[in-house]
Length: 102
Image (cartoon, rainbow, N blue to C red; front, side, top):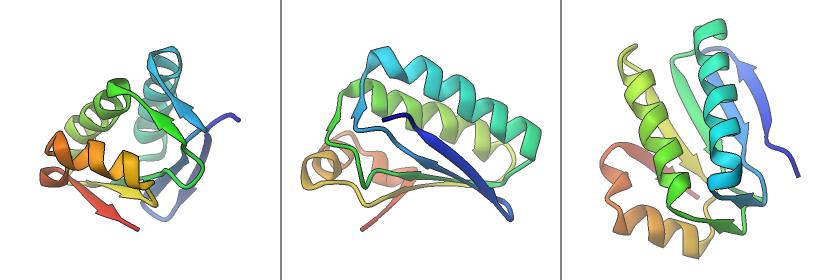
């Protein structure tokens, strides 16, 4: 499954793929940055509903996009993470910069 991008108002919603690993992270980062700059969005929503696996590169995706969008005063949201992904996000301290919602 490929990731999907949708812009609504000032939100960019990214439906994350089933597996988020270092093989996919470069592409996701590049595409997301392109949407941010072209669409002038203020907030990013990463939807993890279909994601079953994520390694540390997923954390890198979130941190990098937070650094970019926070320059514009925006926020990053992580929606519908599985129990395992939520745990990874919380153990890495991501809840300090990313709003995690079920």
